[in-house]
Length: 342
Ligand code: SP5
Ligand code: ZN
Image (cartoon, rainbow, N blue to C red; front, side, top):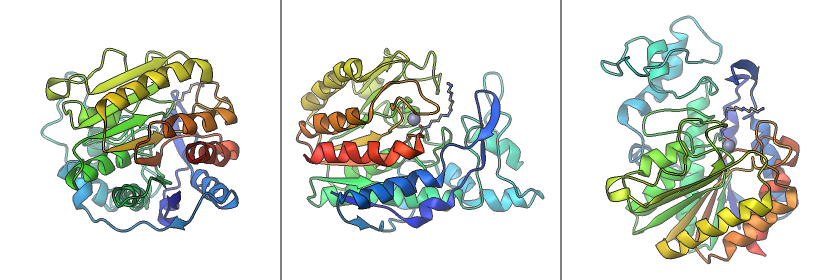
């Protein structure tokens, strides 16, 4: 299958993140994409092509105008205050505080439009995020035009980003943007299967009240893992979306054997739903050696994952999400894609 990638996606290069209450070296780094790209090439998965530019329209179908304007103007406003290091939010409008009226100050806006302090914004962050969204859209368009599958080598990732917030290393929700684009270009039903180790809170919230995009997520139990505040088993959609969101939270230490049962369950929902397209939010962070995660996948298990997904027989768009064991990331990612094609 073809891979879509742009060098512009490397321009987001965070130095630090605040996670687990501490300032740490960033883990969502450009090297992640570089090693996946090298492995795609060395294992001859298929041609690597540049994304097309789809402009702002498909982004605005998912994200709010004020959020996009905030992201677009952020760096200029941030540096106008005399700061030039990457930016972290530090105060949020939680219970008893007001979201509206929106603050004028950029530090207030940072809190209003973010969910965590783990996702710094740098000078080229939004350019990279837009390139990743175009990568996802190009993959979706390829499959819409008849390819059996395509791989969007997205970075930064997308599944934690919501309608009007960034977080979890994500700024634009690549999977949601592609799903909406497919809906706007002839598809009746699109399914998103999220196999990232972390719950895809952004994607879930974007489609929670809709039946035209099915959202299924397999992930570490949010009671003990990031994002902590969404992804419980009882979240199943609301209003017209009731029954069109499903969650499989699993305990820390989950291995392929236990995971496969949940995956089979999710696959049954996919077959009932009969989507025109399947989008896989492809996190590789279930790996046993992932530095921030707690599942126990071995590299071979990713091949099994790909093979299982191929059995669905659906036109499939793979979009990379997380995965932080950089040395093994290329192998694990291409294992899924090769497993799918075998
Ligand atoms: C796309 C994606 O995978 N985003 C993940 C963002 C997670 N950021 C917070 C990480 C907190 C890690 N805590 C691990 C504690 C066990 N040592
Ligand atoms: Zn993740």
